[in-house]
Image (cartoon, rainbow, N blue to C red; front, side, top):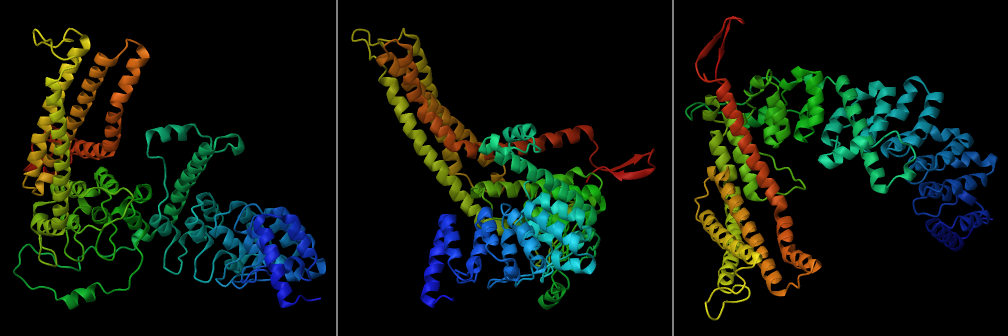
Length: 629
């Protein structure tokens, strides 16, 4: 007997609540007492109880519910909800209902080829969610029952996206590698956005390895093939999964790169834009420029996408397999080095610098807008990242990059005018004027705040010099405790604290009164700030030493544990101060290290090649080479 509307609503509420609470016995009891049984639809999207149990990863419950469906009603298992999902689609969302999926296929084999509203089979759903176990089960069934052109229904959905595309987007690189190996023709298939699997991988690059030394050492000790993960710590289990993902991501890149030849479809190296070295000449009109750049947009190649998104491993693998790919040019006339500069991918720039053969060719690039590599330093693209830096640090990186690119470019590039009639320096100054103002304010505020702290420390240190621990002798006026060893420590620490704090005040005032030219942000301002902060930390540390010595001289009972406690309490503020500024010091240290590295390389280059200009003749190669770049 069919249920009334009120009874249907009541039963739906009861069975839905029982499912969400995990009350499997109650679910079985309710299904046994209603006409449709497990095929009752309690949700507004027409999902059956059996589909919900599968979705909630309840394999045993799903098997029991399947047993409640008579064999003569097996065709009813093909019920689809409002989105076209069958109960087999729900198994593609997890790896815990593989047994239930096998039973469903045994009872209703037609479920395997049914698609939802997007044209996805259950196999496609498993690939989209990166579920390896259920994918393998469904894939074996598909390969056993389907061959030839009919296989396309299972490998590709309505918008041309394939199971390889979806596996990559799910970040299950092991599964993606398996799909690429079993169906190699999918590696060159394009989705509705004309994107190949390698292009998708380049747009969302995986993490190919640990970034810290400690994590690298742990990675070397982890055995990826160790199956029993229940006997290891949760954090170690997480690292094992990360290492497994990294290894298969590298293998997937190698496979996809070998099959990809998109870098050959390059744009012409003949520039569509016009670059000049003076302002006097015929210009292209805005309409003509729009007409030139108004072509149909196509996605960039994997090499350029990996460059834009900073995936050094993919770029390195492509260049390793196809070295000539480095000369590829996109629809805007930009090559790998141009895009690396535009998007501030320093690792890619370093990679190109290591390629001694090709780099001389890519450095001559001029895009369709007449921009040289130097122009692009000013035409940077903002890349939002988690590692937000202060404006002064950003300006320093840009200034150092401009200097670095300028040293590698020919003299003519510094004089070239782009399509807007501007030199590279004009573009750089105009685009960074606002940043310089922000950097000036940031630097001034930091210097002022630090100078206030330094003055306070100097005041305390100066006062401490006249209120020595123990006080003066009433007869001689000399300190009572001057013969104590700790009194000498107090005196030295107080003197160092006073002198270092006053010196830091002078340095910070010098920063505040600086002219803040662009060139100042390269080194001098940061060297002053680094020195000032170092002296300030020294003054704070020495003040704490003096404080600790005073406490021990006046309060210590001679017991070891008392002295240890006093030292710990005294130095606690120093530790807090150091840990607060450790990230800032790391950034400053990296910038200074990079600057000294460039100076060292330039010095060594000058030492090994003293003749930097003029023509040199090499009699062995029988050709003339230029001594300077």
